[in-house]
Image 1 (cartoon, one colour):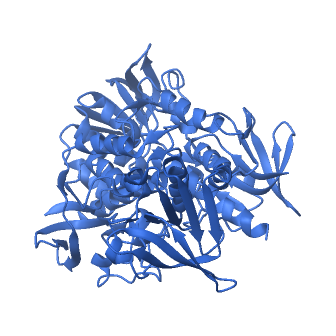
Image 2: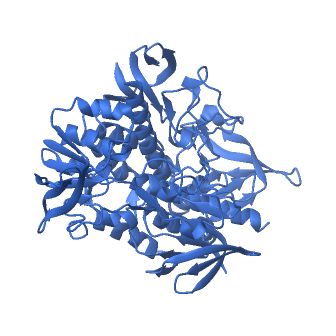
Image 3: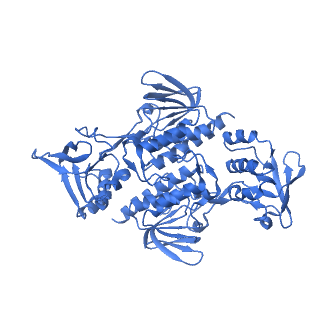
Length: 304
Length: 304
């Protein structure tokens, strides 16, 4: 029986682990991986304390901080469900392992949203990627397409104009990302932008050969050549494991108040899986710290 | 006319400045000082990204990040009041300077209630701390004193009996904090409590060596050995400048929702000056980033 089980190994989960351990809570950290979405980013320019740091380096620093404390860790384990038991909660992994605790902190983050168009599933890993940071270099000197108009799409496009021969940026909406990124992209000579264009199909048999896009204004279809397609259209919360326990919002996010409390006493949530706005490392880390301190207060009251 | 005036140079204000600048907002940062409460902390062991860093070093890193962007700065200037004007807000300094903006972000933090005894000012950061959560672990295995009788003092004492060799808890009044905390403390073997005792002096030349306390009943003075002194007699929000603009809560804090919005459109608040719980650098930085991004969204809507 742990005091606290933290689910998720991104910035929220790791910050929570450090804060829980500093409060001497008997803590289990369980996660698919260490780093979460930080694994998909190259350079980080907006984490306070570092003017610039590689994603992998910041993960290492967070991880070292966690490892400094006696926090039990089960990494590489997917959580299937969380259930309420008399003494607190039971966390069950997909492989059937069970762990119990007085409180749970959900920090499972988000995963990339899929386009759901023909060719996407078949060609994932054969030219279709959800992580330009991870897979970008494979397409050096080739023609690629980036789908999306937010920060992650713009960052992917910025990465790829340096790596690829040519980049097609396709977005159904206007560009919504940071002005600084839009400005940087405007200088790229090997970029073509299609706004108000929807991606309809990914072409190719064994490997990606191109995409079909549709002009939402005229209805006209175009075929663009590409050997790589980076889908960067947003994120879906990893909240399935509490779907039977609490009511999620319309986006599948876990509703929390400003103290990271869910509707169930003892169940806390932090970071991108929650309704807290803005998806940023420093925000997730702050929310994780806050949630762990609130969980500590909850456990103190419980011990009465 | 600025897009955004950020008031406060602590972690919330500096994070907000970086995020506002990355959104290309025309921004003024005005503050009494750079660093805020980070200036009063010895070593920082709980800012994610650094296993250990001196407060002054982390301030420098945050400051360098702000200075990387074209953010106007007025440091060393106290804000007297903020008033609503047709086009947004007017911020008036104590010396009479006036600045206008479409949105304002209040990140003025809190200040510790001070004991006002000899040695307190000189030894702050050299054994005198106003934050056991932040600085407690530095005094592992040492003798410390905690001054105060409310929840923050009791929590500090509870933290420290687990960390320090011995804890002296000194309060001029009876203990006013939660019973659960008082009960827990009663089990501590390494705690001595002096109620009805006033702290008269903090001893030490370069580092804290002890305190002098006075029995308010008998008038008798005692000297207690300690290398750390935690003054936990409360914090005061720096919210006077909006007192005529919005309704503060009973503690003088600025009420905000989870998006850092106050009751007045265009007036945002972040960090320790707000009702958001827990007072930590990483939490304040996260809230500052969040508030700046929300201010950016507000300005985008305004421009429509």
